[in-house]
Image (tube, rainbow, N blue to C red; front, top):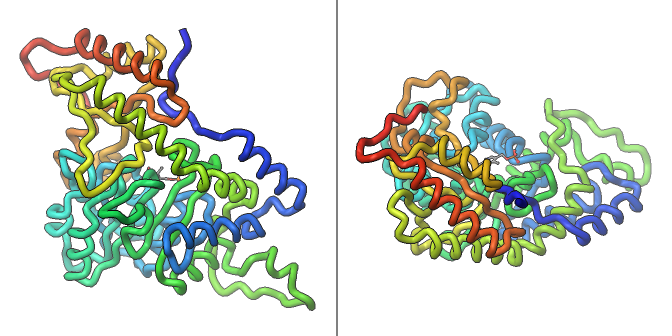
Length: 385
Ligand SMILES: *Cc1c(COP(=O)(O)O)cnc(C)c1O
């Protein structure tokens, strides 16, 4: 029996050829010709005044917090139901992440929860396009405008998604992308910061390279200019090897997303009417990038039992994403009941562009069987957190 992995990156001959060109060029490090080409492509695609290619999305969020001037003790409201990179970024700069609960139907941050959490120390909001589904940016932007706060879009999972006709990654004044191997477009590891504000982009770029300009550029100059360090920067540069891979992947976003969409549509058909789970909901005004396909199991279902059975039958699966406020590192007394509930009941099933429709059918079959086998009778089960 072949196994069906939950995730599988779509990297092939085109990407290999692009890497071979970088090897031949002699400049595999960051901020070289490929990095610059990628930044130009990103700026064009997103209509951004500045695009900075970075080593990962966590670095992009960190640089965003620094460029936006978040100071120790400042509060930043973050979406709760997500990979915890946004809250980590707030902590990197000594800020206090304040966790906002999410919509039960989409898992994206609830604008009403955000509005309720704004206080005298609040400086900004980080919204997340949850596993590829954009948040409610019209409502969020009006809240931050009313209070003079910044808004950052964590579009790590959302390359290719749209909201009210606009691209995810261009839905807030500052956005962060991830090119990690589990995302829809990937260079293995990688990320970018996008912003309409060229000064903010310049600040992030400088801090991404130890606080000096591009070493590649320096080497092209006639004479011997000695760069001066003006910032305690980091090494968050994306290598030109990864940039070359990403340039190919950006060109394939449409094709890869088309295949993910077809998988999502088939799951929706095959699992329709299954009373032991709820399918993902995509509001009319947006489209999903389908980084993950998460279903929400009925409270009577023993999720661990279902997951174990899926894996035993060669179907990859996972819990989906996290309720951040429950992670011990944050030591918060806040509660986000909707997020906590989704964290307990969600199940991620295989979703990637390499799945065949036969495999999708097998996943749905195995899942339906496992749900029957692991549903309690009548009483709602107590599910361990
Ligand atoms: C994956 C992910 C990140 C982290 O991206 P890296 O590129 O691995 O640093 C950040 N935010 C969200 C919402 C993610 O899903």
